[in-house]
Amino acid sequence: MQYRTLDNGHTSFDVSTLCLGTMFMGTRTDEETSFAILDRFVEAGGTFLDTANNYNAWVGGYGRDSEDVLGRWLASRGNRDDLRIATKLGAAKKDPDLPLSNTPPTNYQGLAASTVHDEAHESLRHLGIDHIDVLYGHVDDRETPLEETVGAFGKLVDEGVVGIPGISNVAVWRVVEARDTAARLGVAPYGAVQQSYSYVYPRPQPIRTNWATPELLDYARSTGTAGRPGLTVLAYSPLHQGVFVRDDKPLGDGSDHAGSRERIKVLRAVAAEIGATPNQVALAWLLGGEVPVVPVFGASSVAQLDEALGAADLVLDDEVRARLDAA
Image (cartoon, rainbow, N blue to C red; front, top):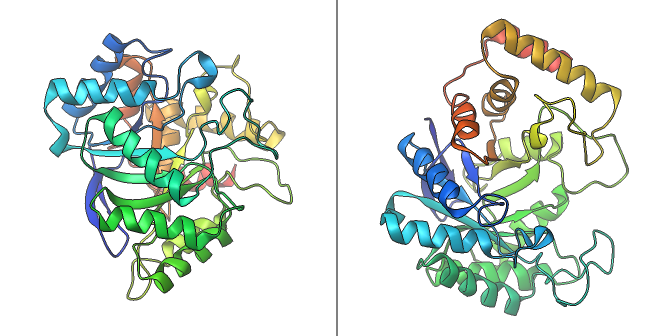
């Protein structure tokens, strides 16, 4: 396992460069299997776990299923101090009787100060911990003033409830404005941004706020210097639910086009030539980029986890990376 430092100029700690996403633990992945996956991840040196307050609600869960599984596992293993826990708030249902939508009215809880405070403390209770290492706003909320949202996250940091605030599914300009707002308010800024990002990419469209863009990566690269607090980019869905290894899996979220299909062909060819799996190469490509990101990946079995763990020490040489980039 390799490690890197998350540092937003206020709080700093190390995490494993692979982050284990726990989305389906407690629903699609039963608790016994979930515990086995978590145990193996820690055994391999993994220290970074990711969840949210609304996962699994769309597959028959109640939203906090994975938080509760993590909480029971942490209590049974007594290893909280060895790990970094991330969770998210703001995208659960505001009205439980209405559906969620990606277009207004979304029915998201949003990021009002009261929601940030209440949901953070509820996550503490479900996880059985006294602080959250990384707390994300799950989806940007443009209806709430940035001063209110950023101030609420900053207050949680000041109270010792949160280590590093973060944001997900957000436009780059909103990240910049939120961090400027934090500086004006004198509170801890967002130090983590979690976006969809992988070896394949979406079709261009005028507005797409859930993917990591070249502009976001360039902005992150400019941080971590005097007067510019560090910002780490994390990539969710880096393996697209198996699309790199299974032809029956569809390319989703705007990435179904000829360019992506060509990249998958090259990815598979490269993997075969270097004796790795396509998934391992896809993760290594993210880890070793000019602007390295932290992949947040899921596993439904220990075997799937072990495959992904093989990417931690896989270094793609310059020739291989150039070939992958050129596809």
